[in-house]
Image (tube, rainbow, N blue to C red; front, side, top):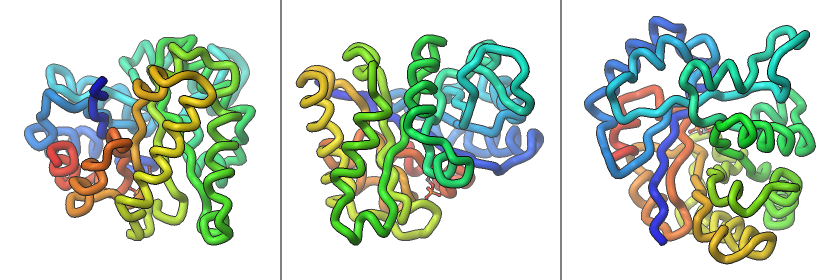
Length: 248
Ligand code: PGA
């Protein structure tokens, strides 16, 4: 089976609504590629103007966060039905910044993955180890533990439709990319573990991205690896470089 490549930009807390539209227009011709899923995951306030600005293009819309309830007294949160109604397809869940800065744990992340599927959103589930865990040589156990908790209770069919982003925390925003071999090693480990938890067909279907200082210069090598099906791009998604990554 051949998996369709997915290149997603994670804009994080960048771009006001008017800057967002300007960026979409700048990237418009650069990100054209019908063989790749191209996704912009944008701040909540940019969702509506970006949905309008990408109309008629190959770009799909993603969000960076949501809460697990549909509506009610949850000041400051946005819900899956709100995202769906605004045209969002993908949702980033479990990014290391949500885990580390906002205290999201694997129990909440697992609930968010389930809620996303129940609401018709496609999760991009992030996992990854800190530098400490890598240097201590325990990153493999750590990644397996995150995957086990975050996928708990999901069906094989759901996991087949999941995107998992392997993002070593030490490579995020640091300019220190994992080597293509390091990234491939962990992406393969994740796929093998899914084969163990589910079956070979599910492991073949799940799409696995690498994320962490991916840029125009290193994308082609990372994406040439057999278990790396795409990228989750932070800094470089805000620049014309993103077009080069899409077409790497
Ligand atoms: P980066 O961020 O590309 O700026 O390292 C990636 C991410 O955090 O998703």
